[in-house]
Length: 298
Image (cartoon, rainbow, N blue to C red; front, side, top):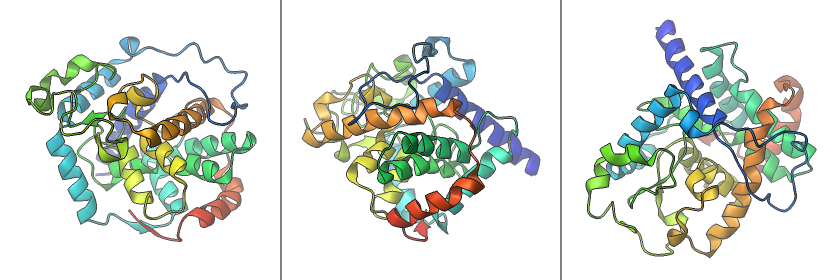
């Protein structure tokens, strides 16, 4: 059994890292320019056409299986069960076991990525609520340890389900095998939604972003900008490519600005010097206590 778990975890981590490798961000920062990445070359990022087969196969499966039916079921399943009851730092340590069991030579453990994201924000003088958002933003990947159906419902870019799949989603042709593409309602421009209904009223493809947003929206004192950073940080068709403007309301533009501010710290901090979790824990546990209860339902 340990060998099976390790192999599965290794595949998960490799796919997650490969997806991150081909993500690029070009956009304005929120409130102030980031400073930590000033010397980094952001022009040399891989294009999806040049991505490895693992990434292409991953998105093919994701695009075929993320249907309205599945997304409704995923939300019902989320509300009908409690997966764990633990604090934020304990959740970080639990997520870190994913890497420990798979590949010790991976570039970064999960906890290091979270700490590097938060530390980059801290060095740039970002507010405490933003630092702690960076610290927790990927905790939704616990879904993989809680029994997801695969990798396709945990990681990867997210998109709206219930209306026509946008051409601005990567590999749009792979939606041909998704049954919703042949549905007369789900394949229409607005689908099950109304014009300018607001993104808070749409279903995004289920994964670690959406899961963590639902966990934290009622179990934290994070501001709405922070919750937007968590829910939308993998929503690349929207925050990078400009899709879904026909569904946006006025509040979404404020959220878009926040998500664009967040993403450089998520993407570019991975190459920074390594963090010492034990050394940084006291500082971040104080921040955690300000925004979260001692224990959360996951």
